[in-house]
Image (cartoon, rainbow, N blue to C red; front, top):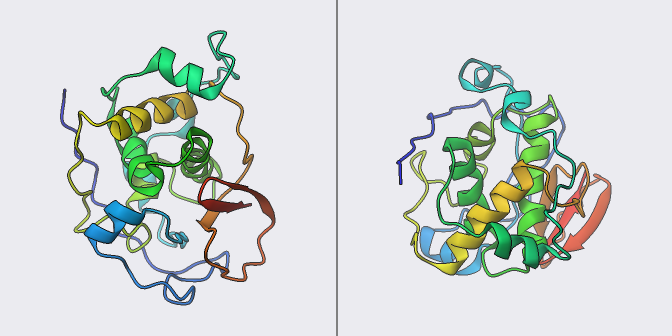
Length: 210
């Protein structure tokens, strides 16, 4: 499989949406071992005030399919995952998204993994965040599994990685209806950050907001 390297992204920590920082949410940055075992911590993205991501990002129109819930006659998300199951990513954007799904939600129900993928995609499409999936995920200090502007190694033969890659494809191609439409934020169920965002749903180990 081809190896992809995501561009190193450095963003200013200004947040024009007044979202709480990781420190304000009462959550220390987890080390890699705890991310591998827990992967259910709070994650809040601050917004880029420099616009630098625009220089390295593809247009969101180029990233996402226009297909609408083309589920190939699947009767459930698990059925669709079985149909499309693969460990191969098609490009760098799917590689980044699959990595985020893996570290944030591996072991969760497929609906929870899909919801996490949808949040990343929604941010890239929103016009208020970086416009590529990789630049959303690699925003400095936002996702605790990102260390040194890179993700930890992933066991590519694992079931969790296969599911993450397949879920990433399904979300990017809009093959399954989102249960968290327009969600831009999520946190672990065990936390209560007191956000003023509109709550959409609790799916898997996370609560989602727009």
